[in-house]
Every structure is written in C-alpha cells, then in structure tokens.
Length: 454
Figure 1 (cartoon, rainbow, N blue to C red):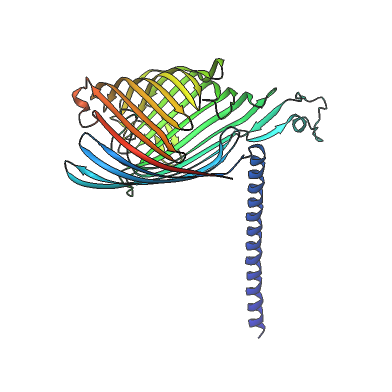
Figure 2: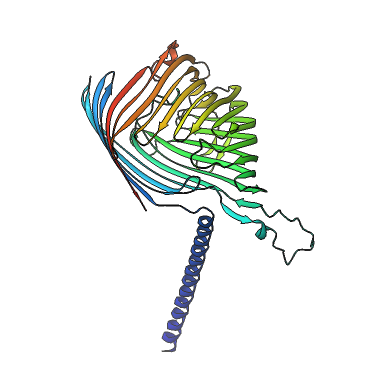
C-alpha cells in the first residue's frame, strides 16, 4: 500500500513539474507575443496608414507573337494600406489562364502570382524631448543635448515577398536571363540602423544600411531538388537621405562606400562584387521634379559569399573571373502622374545559371497616368558580352521596346494595347541556343477595375 502511494505521489510530482514547465513556456510565449505586439504598435504609431483600399480587376486579352496566337483571361485582387510616403502594407493575387495555337498545334497554360509588401519609412521614431530625457544612472550630467527639432528613426523597414508559378519572362529583361517559363519564390528586407534628422524628419543622415534579397527559381513548375538559388545584398555605413512624398519619382540617397554582392547557384555557381565609392540616387537638379542618378565603381566576378541557406557561394571552376568598371548615369523629369527620362547603365552580372554578362544599356522612357488615359513607352538598346565558360564567349547588339496604353471607356472599364519586343543582331555564333533571339508579342486588352476605399 505504501509503495503504491509513493509511486502515485511520485507520478503526481512529475506531472506537477511538467505542468509547471508548460505553464512557464506558455507565459514566455505570451510575453514574447506581447512584446511583438508592442513593437508592431510602436511601428504603426510612427507609420500610420491613411485608408484601406481593395482593388479587384478582370482582364481579357488577345494577341500573339511571330509563331502563335492566343487569348488570355486574368483576375487580380489586392488590398493595401496607403501611408504618407508609401503603402504601409499591401498584398495581392493574380491568376491567368490562356489558350491558343502555334506551329506545334493547340496550347493552353496558366500562371499564378502572389505578393506582399510592408513599408515603414519612419521606423521607431523618437523626438528631441525623448532623446534629451536625463538618464538617472548617468555619471555625466552635461550630456549631449539635441535641438528641439531633432528626430531619430530606428530601423526604418521595407519588406517584400512574392511567389510566381509558370511565369513568362519579359523581352526587356537582362539579356543573359534564361528566356523560358519559370517559377520562383523570393523575399527582401531593407533597413537602416538609424536615421538622424536635426531639422526636418524628412532629411538627414543614416548610419548603417542594408538591402537583402533571396530567391529560388525553377524552370517551368517547381520540382524537388531542382531549384536555382540567388542571393543579393547591398550595404554601407553612411547615407545622406531625403524622403519625398509619394507623388515624387524617387527619394534622394547619397551612399558613401556602397557595396553590392550577388551570388547564384544552380548546376554551377558564381559570386560577384560591386564597389562604388559614392552612389547617388534621386539628386535634385534645382527641382524635386528633375532628378539625377550617378554612380561609378568596380565590378568583379570571383567573390566569395557566405549564405546561411546555401553555404559558400563562389565561382565554379569553369566560370571566368572578369573585372571591369560599372556605373549608372540618368536624368528623369516629372511626377508619378507624368514623367520622362533617360539612363545609361553598365553592369556585370550573372543569371541564375551562372552565365556572366557585361551589358551596356541605354534606356529612354515616358509615362502618363491621368484619370482617363495611362501608359508607358520604354525604348532601349546597347551591347552585351556573354561569358559561358573559361574559353567560350560571344557578343551581341540589341534594341527593343515595351509599350502599353489604356483608355477609359468608362470609369471602371479600360481598353488597352500591350507590346514588347527585342531585336538581337550582330550576334556571335556561341550565343545561338543560349541567349534569347529576336522576338515580339502584342496584345489587345479589355480591363474592368474597381477600387473600394474605406
């Protein structure tokens, strides 16, 4: 009897300890949840949305390219929380189905895209009175006192994520991108350690900034174990910034000693480094509607990149090491409602298949977004040198365009035209079968769209 009682008491003590452990774990989870909720509330206090907008769209398209014709039906839905400078949060879903004919006979296909974004440009914001609040543990009573107009924003944040199934590439993509249907999943994080503003909260200096993106790609539909991996990172330690309103073309940033890393791994791998002493984006040329971008730096393949998801990413034995100057110079004029611009970009980059390309591209564009008429025309041209392995390379020249225009038949119904194409000429023989040839496609569209605003 005593033995049975002792065993029962021992089991009860064990159960009691397990329940105590579970209770402590639950309390820790609740504390973490409450801390996370408090942090989210602090972020939203500094980055309040102004409305809630739901958009639904249905589109019918018909058109084709040089070898096929097809018709498409697409449905799109999105929800967003507009803020002062950007959408505080946004999510969207697109589904598209198409059928048609080609030289090979009747065809049918589908595409799905989903995405989500968050934009908290003010981060966690503290004013001068909070910064100047005396520390009871301070040993130096004559500590630094900030002016009354000072604000400090900690961890301004931009987040993005998207998924695509059976997507079709654009003719305006980088010339070394594989021109085939693909699926992908990706996410990106952009943040700064701190933004200090002594006069206006919209301008000042940032200390330590970083943009990180990771991406996984499949040829066609996803298949286990056959994903290509891509890592992109940009970081630096000092930035002069100015945040403009959401109608402006861009914010201003002047980055000192800006570093970019790009690593890819599929059947082969490659690591690239780009270093710019100064990178200028959105510099005002006497007006917030006339902006310039300027950067010149060094680009090189052969970088060694450490990734928690893919281990060490570096050049495979058959990927050449290339070093050259890279840069960008461009001017744009206008607002989000109407703008024109021209830009020259020289890049050394790699596709997910580790095919390197040195591309020189000149682009000019014009955009219009009015209540009853919207459109964009972009023309581009340049040259590219492709490096396939240590001994095989080839060059090409190219020119192309992308264009779309929509006219409002009524307030919720738009009739439009879409077109894009590229012409590749003066091509060396090694490019055949590896780099997309010339091509064009055009579509006539009819789109119904409705916004619900709360």
